Image (tube, rainbow, N blue to C red; front, side, top):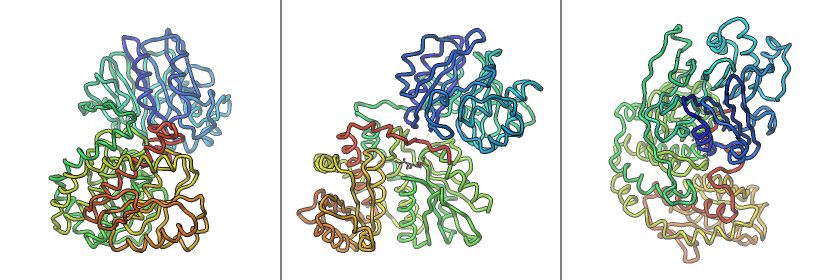
Length: 577
Ligand code: F6R
């Protein structure tokens, strides 16, 4: 979703600002823009194409700039609606991430005299700054925004008479980085390589940066200047010879699994799970598909009552047990729907365990316990290694809390998993067949149905082929009406107790003309199956299967020439509801 970056320096900042903006591309965007402040004049450039297009038109450079990638929420994709956005008298300018819920009320209450030139909620903030600044200082005006704005916002604001970038943060991420210059951005990845340390702003923080220094306050700290807890910056985002981040990230899974053989979990997390009688898992998208696997592990392996909920549908009522524990899963740690669900859970005083790939994220801050899946940065919008590893964390926890020894089974996977890439050509063959089709169905039962859900999501998000997954038993209750001689159905078979039933359903669709492919474990396979993999423990087969379904989606999208790492309309970090 939207990304923001602002740089202040004694040197020109075009290079670092545009590079930062490019690193925000993976979050998803439909327009972009940049403003320089030079000798008390704003110079703004915008594009409704890619950042490449924006850079081509920039004909100046300077020591102070703010820039933005926009993912349209309020108002269509247009140059007017692209950020940065001016106040009506062009004295102030803003970039904003988030959504202002009460923008119409603010317009009515404070801004009746103002002319608006865009359809955005953001324009209300910058005109409000103009309105407030007539009666107080800029810093006081920024602080007053906390009293008036409702919603989520991370903003960078410039007054054309000051060489400063003001900032404010509420529920949208904002990070202050220290390299040769001061940089403030919504995403740690946008910081330049030579950044030594960074500070993740907290809700209620506000202040400004100049070319040499920063000033930071928090509304709850009565205007005392805040000193920062820095974190060292350490990440590698090179493609390492791969064509796309998605491919690279799938190929990282075998190595990452090694770290899990002896992974230790905090005793207090283990005890909390042991003492709970119900486990509720909440997440969105791919993380929800991992949560569904988690619910199956906790109920079947640990024999605890467990359910998975989609964050945006989550409603807490009074029926949850006192001894219930909530487990939330998020790759980014910033998903707005999940943040809202956690607020509801915390209001009812339940404890939350977060399983996440980002240290210092909002979701970590909101939770009582935190498990870092340590997958390393995931750049491709389509989540791959994070799905596999967060599922693995839940598999381990489900075993640990009932004192099961799973190490041998996991070691077997770790020792053999690299061979999964040997079936690459078979996956490519299926990919080339399905690439020009419009619809595809996945079929499974039990754990295999849960894997089909993820297979289907992965395929549709990067190939744009319409894909659905069905529990095999449910097919005959309606969806089989869709099957015709042009249908493609892929079955996943890893669970001996369900294998025959899935085979029966595959026969049913075949006899109605569908072309079928089967991905199966050796002991459950038929010679005619398309991809047969070595037998692994029933609950761990999700590891090789996840790699296969991720690669199938990848090769299909590759055949179609799609923008694999940045699929249309999608964002890596979904920071609006
Ligand atoms: C799909 C994908 C999304 C995310 C979802 C939740 O590949 O990545 O479905 O899983 O937006 O995001 P996180 O895990 O960051 O909470």
